[in-house]
Image (tube, rainbow, N blue to C red; front, side, top):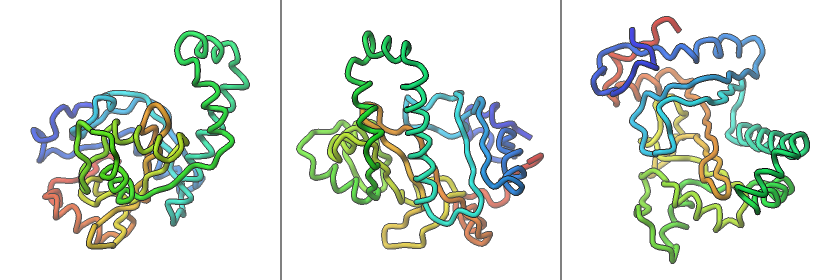
Length: 234
């Protein structure tokens, strides 16, 4: 058994079962409490395409039971962002003032404006079309089926009015096997969402999990993981 934190190059361990031990308590707890979360060190096992995605970092991971739409997840993400932001602004005035004075003079006002507005939602396909029609030259050419880069994310937020932006329904082949198949076409997508914020780009993400066993088995077979993938000890 190989723990997730031991994975450096997944290609070297193609036939080794991987156990993501940090995940194991949540599915059990979720059945009793429906809304659960963990906060602790996370170890990234995939080949990340972004320099902002560290191999080891701290992250809040939340799970909701009996959720049938991305809208439910997006509402939780928006509420969490606004609650955390308003709490910091009201409970930590000295830290906020220091940050405002020496690091990002305009950020306090921008955050206060974000708290007053509803977040905007667009699909991944709409995002790609917006980027293709942009007069701005990008280092990475926007194409359907490719990951959105930080430069794309920042442009999309600016295009939509400098408010937090949800991008939903990403290409099937871009996302992990456990994200729920939308069964759409010809551009095949999954029920995934990323929250983009001004000045940063992607802040957090989520998805509906695939609960239909035949879909999971088919996806694992397609990825060549049907025999190798196991979750020992979970």
